[in-house]
Length: 217
Length: 251
Image (tube, rainbow over all chains, first blue to last red; front, side, top):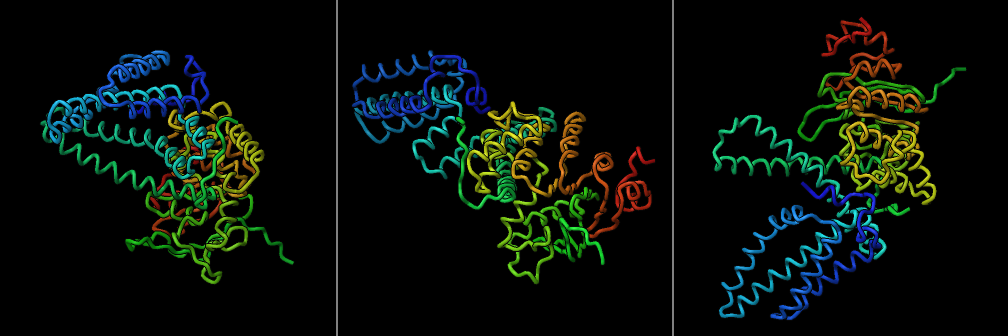
């Protein structure tokens, strides 16, 4: 499920929630850039950065369960990606590269997670508008945010429909086949919905220009 | 001297064929006077949604640019490519699925979408958003994500988005689908307050009795019957022949 609980408007609960939106984005970007710029084998600096990010997550009230679930999705990918480094580079340096890569990516991922947790998405978009980010990009982010929920619901309905008819007797290899079919179906439905949404935009006078009403008013 | 009633929508021999060759509308002629509340009923696949989409210029995909070929007129103006902007300012279109219509991250931004496209001043846009949300009883939900709302609330927000554009004609495609009785009553109350012309395509015949004064029965893209609500909906011959049923209230 997308981070609906974390990325929607709510009353400020922690010190992180009270920070200005621009400062939150700046801190996140600074952390990611710092993670990328720390030289190889400067382990204390990398460890310090990781500790700072964990402190930020702790201050933001992110629970360990939430963190582990997100890391559980991200770390396997990172593991595979990191293991490809020794395959192309030999010697001790390869392992230093791998570990450094894991650390940098984990720090960046956690920094992003912190931002998601402390900044409601509409406020992120408002801050990006203030920073003169291209409007088309902001509009695409807005659509992505809105339609992630809808597609997720659509996927849930498809899975329920399958579960209601497989009587728990479908072997695992066949469920992979139906998963692939379901993804295809989801894509087709998403395309149909995109067409209807485009019509809904035209019906309300959209002429191709992107216009916004600031969320902070 | 004849007293000519001003016309909100006029259809002149309107026909439409989808690219797959299916004839969805077949020579439909109809006059909808200003202020009328018209219901379009008929079985699924009769062409109701296709007909409504012509009233907002959403169909055909490439509208004509010559007055001679125009088949749809809104307030006397032919729906041509150059007039689409003005036509859509006058005709508000409510889609069947509210998720098609609510595409912004917050309720407030979604309601503001139409007024912003009208090129209004920011203060006026904000005032219209507030009025629109208040009119549908959703003023408290302005900062919420539409995904958090119930279907009934989403429909009301969609309606607020239309009302914020201050259209003179509302065209509604299945407005009561997936609504529970309370949400349906709320929607009915909001629509009763609307002062302009109302055109509703629906299967909900009780809703039609409560709201509309005239009914048009559509099947296979043709107008099969047209007349006052009570007379059409209580006629078992018309209703049975076109896959409908006389509502209990009229039996």
